[in-house]
Length: 94
Image (cartoon, rainbow, N blue to C red):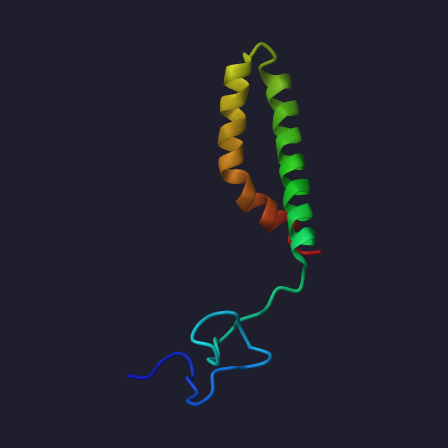
């Protein structure tokens, strides 16, 4: 049985590891390092969430303007549960 990655014996202290996972020194097929900084990723995430929450709020207020705050918070909670996936998918390509 062969492994899907290569393990090299010897000194595992690499100055520029090919990936941040252990054991250090293995090759992971298809691994790509992030090309964006953390602030850039977070800003894209928050912009995406703002767009999704804003759109949801406008649609809900137009369709059911008499909803109570509790019902609106419940709707926003469900949107919050699914929005991270959609915001990353929609806005990830820079």
